[in-house]
Length: 196
View: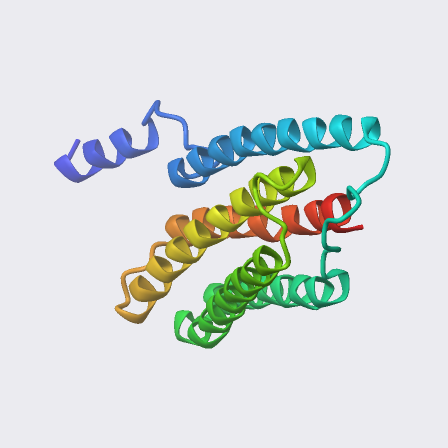
């Protein structure tokens, strides 16, 4: 046998199984699963307190901007759609993924900035962490999502930087997508529970 045929036998008989998911994606899925449990606990506590209240929101507390936040929800969903388009483009030609990925980043940044503007407005109207249980839960739940959105934008920004430099690995991009889709998919649930 020649050395080349021996090397080919080693490759064929490699006993290591191929991973079903890249490690980065599996790690992100485990992290997202833990975060989902945390949000489920927050939403459960919110539901219990809300159902035990005589009136919700409590009298004298400002009403949440339902219509404006519905628009902002559409912006975040559009960000998820842009990321989906970026993923499809990435599979064909990585250069085609730049524009939709930066679009996803821009829409996500708009969402976070708009939520920040909403918070400032509500604080001026008297809804604070200490004004009522309503305010406490609002800032806790929406704020926790906002922190996740900022972290997601950081992850997407890192992916966009790597893509622009030709260094973005498919597994890294897939892990970033898992996290951003979690942020995008969770928000309509929170909007429905907290705002409506």
